[in-house]
Image 1 (tube, helix red, strand yellow):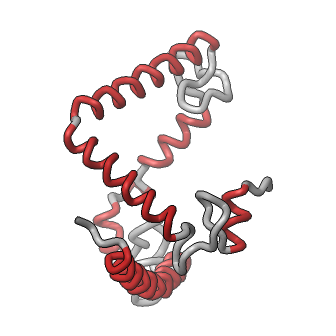
Image 2 (image 1 turned 180 degrees about the vertical axis):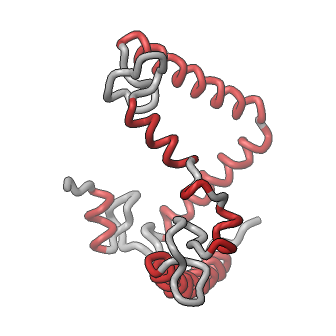
Length: 174
């Protein structure tokens, strides 16, 4: 994997924007760059709120680019979704993209998700449920790990709040 300057600075605790000063605690920017970034972002969002026309222009430009890309891929006979493989006959997508889409929308075992538990099946995958739970053993472990991660998230939220309060003291907004 190629490491960028951003990654190197981040590892060493140096400001990723200027690369000169030491970054603040729980941040990747030095105080000067953090202030500049905050000002730049506030200007950006103020302009975005004011100028709805500008936003619509950006969306229109993106739509045009996607249409051009799709047209080029279609003319070349490539899948318009991934652009890697040839199109399936009678479709603009390749067989892999079609199967991914079908797999995404398919009901497992032909039973809607909301009714799986009443049939004794896992809510997520449709496999037989585990013990007294509404999910299989695999999804129970995933959910248990998620709960542990959620506790860590609470700690991150607390640290973020402390950082916000600290920044409010340093960068007084007028």
